[in-house]
Figure (tube, rainbow, N blue to C red):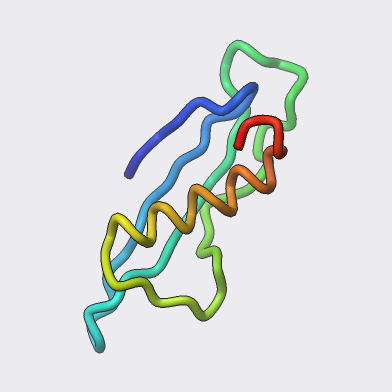
Length: 78
């Protein structure tokens, strides 16, 4: 799992490998940082993103997860 601070949020990025074909799927969670009490505490619970997409590598899946997370948090941080 990779955690990044993006503005007032912690963005948790991860990938899981599929047993049946060896591909990778992307997962994201977005939470408020402890310093920011005004942000929503659970902006996005841990879940698979980029429905139906299977990536060739773990790095590609995490990059896909990051792209979705940045779009949700706001374009100013992308």
